Amino acid sequence: MWTEKLQVQGPYNFDLVLERLSLDPLQVVDFTNRTVKVPLYIEKEPIILQVQAMGNIDEPSFIIKGQSKVYKSKAIERLKKVFHWHQPLEGISRHFRESDLREIFEEHRGTAIVLDFDYYSCLVKCIIHQQLNLSFAHTLTERFVKTFGFQMEGAWFYPTPETTAQLQIEQLRAIQFSGRKAEYVIGLSEQIIQGHLNLDIMEKLSDQEVMDTLIKIRGIGRWTAENFLLFGLGRPNLFPKADIGIQNALKILYGLPQKPTQEEMESYSVNWAPYLSYASLYLWRSIEKRSEKK
Image (cartoon, rainbow, N blue to C red; front, side):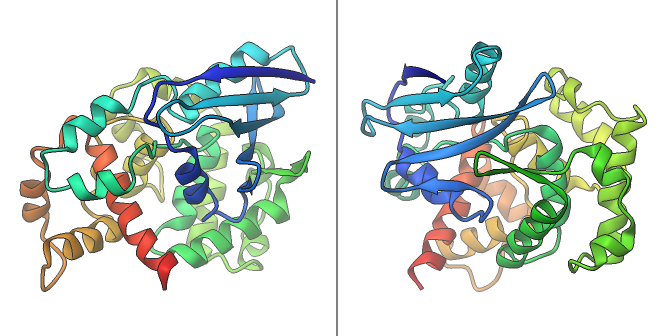
């Protein structure tokens, strides 16, 4: 067992990060101790890390614990990207203080974009979530992982591409996948194990190159590719205009009689660049909080 303490530049509100993570039933979140268990693959080896917040919003610090020291340095570097500890949030917050989103950014001050823990699970989750309400999307994802994935130290790993590629459509339909969604998830996994898709090189590609690569794959459209860019790779300037959640949040924010058009969304967001991903996150968060209060 090893332990490492990290100091991070504020503002950073880990309690709000935990709150958003807890929307996913697969996350092992402990609000009392301010911890989350993080399943990672480092050099294809599954490992579990525990992240615990020790500081406050303006002076955040974290205790990281893991079992094997072999992958310690690489695991910590991955955590820095996953939890957005590598880039201070103050500049991003300052950017939005004079914008239409200032009140939302003040309410959720210090909320970071937290990445999915690996590229494959991010893409699979995006496919599963397509055209589903958030509650059932989480339920369906949980069934998939707990049926075909594996557990380690109390945390769940998604099934590997090798495991998923061997599944039959009927096995996924048995847990309420549609036939088409089952085909998409299995097909994606086959593309990876056959060497036609290498997710590990995505970090080196531009947004457009990632988009062009992914939308060639059956079952992946612009919405899924944009969400992968945002929550898989952590790209800072993504604004998925087709996302219903963002449309609903803008409708409420501006008191619109109906959801905004693509042109209206473009007009609203023009001054939010180059941090459109954060505008997206905080807009999502604004309606998630409304749901939690009901």
